Every structure is written in C-alpha cells, then in structure tokens.
Length: 263
Image (spheres, one colour):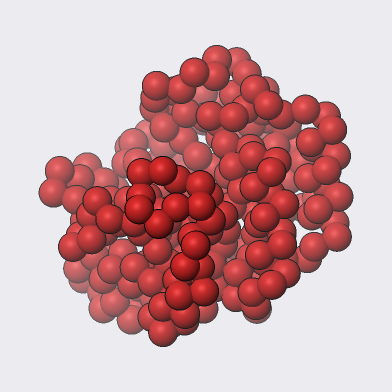
C-alpha cells in the first residue's frame, strides 16, 4: 500500500480539462483505493482552500489535511488567518501538518522578505501546535537552510515536498533528520540530477507523493495527475535504488505514518 503525502484535491486549476476541486472527485478517490492508496495528505495553499481541506478530511476517511499558505500567496498571511489556522487545527484532529509553506524564488511576484516572514510564522505555528511542516523550496535553498537552521526550529519535523535535487539542500536535510518526498518528475527524461538525488536519499527519510494535479509521471506526463499514480513514483524509485516497488511502498508508508502520526 501507498501514502500519497502531497495531493491537492481542493484546487481550481485551469490547465486541466477537469477543473475545480476535481469535479470527478469520488472517481478519483475510488481509483486511489483500487490502487492501494492507504492515505492521502491534502495541503491547502491559502485560507479559503484550508476550509475545503478541513471539510474533505472530515468527509473521507483516508484523506488527511495540512493547512498553510503557499509562498505565491505569502503576502496574504495575516494575524487573523493564523488564528483561524490554529482554530482549525485544534478542532480537527485530521489536520496532520502545517503547509504547504516555504520559499519560491522562481518567477514569484511576492518579495523574498515577505515569503521569509510568512515561512517563519508558519514554523512558529507548527511549534505551537506540535505539528510537522510541509516545506516548498524552489530556487531558494540558501535562504531555506538559513531559516531552518535557527535554533528554535531544531525540533520541528519537516519534509521537503516535490524535492528538486539541490545537493546542498539534500545534505542539509539528511544532516537535520528531515524527510525528502519525490513525485512523478523523477520519471521525466531530463531529470538526471533528481534521479541522482533519489539514489542518495536514505530509505528512512524517503517519502512519495503525486503533487496532484501537477507533475503526472510517465506515461501520463501532461495529463492531470491523481493519487492513484503514486504507484508509478514508487516503481521508478525502486528501479533507481534496486528495490522492488513493494519494498519502496512499504518503507515510504511507514515513514509517512511516523511523520504525520497516521495509524
């Protein structure tokens, strides 16, 4: 069985023909079950989506939530939203993480200092609630490392979702005992650096995800992604590290259960 540690099931994405919170969501969930997906972590990207995330986790037994504001929307974070996040997390025990949050310097209109402040406030919230953090990092690993090296954050559990392959960040994450999560882009033709990163990731720090609806693995590249495709990520990792798909599924499921506190 598998745990998809990052799938946006409550997102309005115009690039795909079936848009708006997966209009065929029940079919998507049924296919995930059929593909032996044990659990799905559904992160928010702004306050409005956090409400949908919380509701869906209430409605579907194997869907769990994470709440936070994506770096692209970091300028929208307010004290009031943080108070609301805290309330949601305290009232819904299926909110298992803070995120996604982090830094994204790739064509992002939000100033780096605004993103950094938002990230720190998310980390502070995680400390207060004793929840792990789902970290987004794109072309910002130096600043991510600087913030996450602060002494007050040393006890927080973190996972770098959709890991992009930066050697310095991988070394930092492994040294700190953080987790690394890979998605379908490891199957892409030009992803040699990323595949090398997979080979250098300790098994006890490895997770898998789809990042649905994005980054569908081969042979579905360019299509809408969904949690059932997480098996293709496990298979690709297995081929890279000379393990069976079943072995990768087992170890990544155990890691995700431990990280998110899922039984």
